[in-house]
Image (cartoon, rainbow, N blue to C red):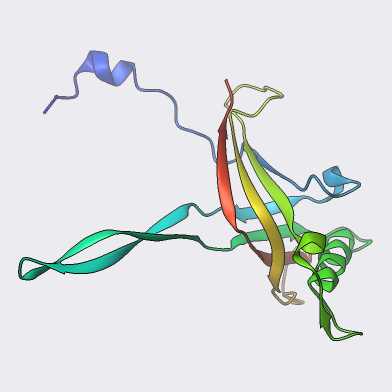
Length: 168
């Protein structure tokens, strides 16, 4: 096992900064108006499958699944985020007609871009969440006690996979 020497410690890279990310919805007409304040982008999980072998259980890779993406949107005074999410949700299930939409009509990609510490215009890494759709829109937190009184719109999006794109 290698010891951490002064020379090794001096060569450790700076940490990735949490505030250098941006969520993009490529399908919207005005993607710059849809601002995400909090994002919890999940990674794919490989579920273990137990198998009995030689008097004990052994675990092997089974199915791959991915949790929903949790996003909290900054709401503007024209309720742009709420209107966009509600319009997208009505493609999944239309409350007037009581019918579900076709997956080809409501599945869209969501991208989370990660940037380096320098003020670069190109992301270092991108997570592309494939075939997403809004599954759950949390309630507004209406509260007279809040100092700034801003509304945020938390929502969850089901995804069918994630692609990791490494840029140089």
